[in-house]
Image 1 (tube, rainbow, N blue to C red):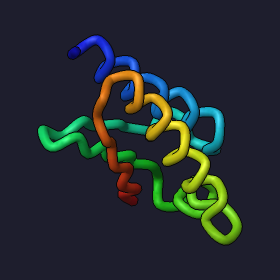
Image 2: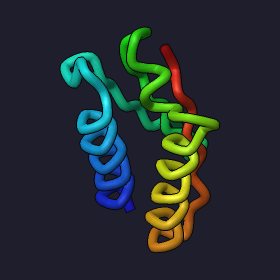
Image 3: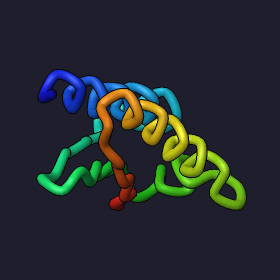
Length: 80
């Protein structure tokens, strides 16, 4: 099951790097209780969240779809 966790973490990291202006400042952590923390530069938080939260909602949808395969329920937290 740790392979799936690594894949979910890598998926979130890659997508976040495509969205932000400073991809070298993107860090993704997986906590014990199925929480994925996405840390980006302070200037890029708005881009990750998007207008009316559309981008972060889409990221959470992808995360939940990936969690179905692993039979887990992941939570995404954006940290600046």
